[in-house]
Image (cartoon, rainbow, N blue to C red):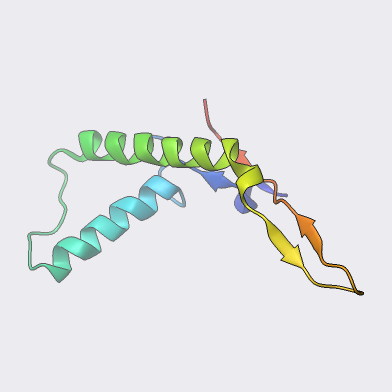
Length: 92
């Protein structure tokens, strides 16, 4: 599993292609849908800090509960049950 295949919360120096970056993007889209002013640089550090914290919490929770994800794979008379391994990168 390469770094690109792992969940990544993000940080201030590497925000692109992160869960926090996707949250910021989705927030901007939602603002536009509601006719609100677009995101600008005011409060950017605080906003990104919030998204990074939420993303870290979500990823840590998913990783700590990874045995909750059960995938049933049918085959040859008896279904196999597998649990995925949730790969992460950059979590402190």
